[in-house]
Length: 217
Image (cartoon, rainbow, N blue to C red; front, side, top):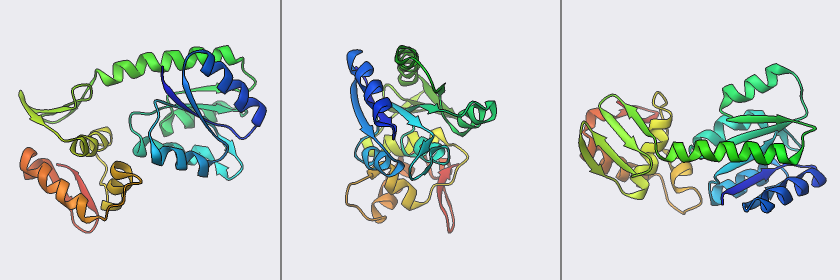
């Protein structure tokens, strides 16, 4: 059973999708807008996000890259009435994992979700590699060379975010929002965890970009 968030503003479509997914033994959450989507994801990152691109409060295409950073292990399936190939391609380039075009049969959507979950299982068994470091997603352990480095939950989430976006510089605010989410913390906690990670990794592997934030070195 997977936890799935369906973001769709058309009530009938949302209800049909939810009903078919529940019949396939999934735990389904729903949202009708971009604002409601973020409200749900701030509480918990789901296994699969089913995202209609055209929503009352904006174009969800613009939110895909943000969701990918916020919830790097969430798989994104976009739903759109737009038939132009460029929109499908753009969605995939922005970070979506698959798409369906309206109108579609609910069974097709369920089949695509099953395929995504098979890939997600592979995701949890994969290793993210950067230079001499390997982050085992399933084990939640970092390897430097062949030496394992034990990580706390927050340390792992910080590194998962960075390994998933190895060239990106993350500000303290971005790390706070994506790792601590709705927990009440100030940016000082980010510096504390970065310091602990540097002691484990070495300063050269986690560097400061002055005036901006932190990145893999």
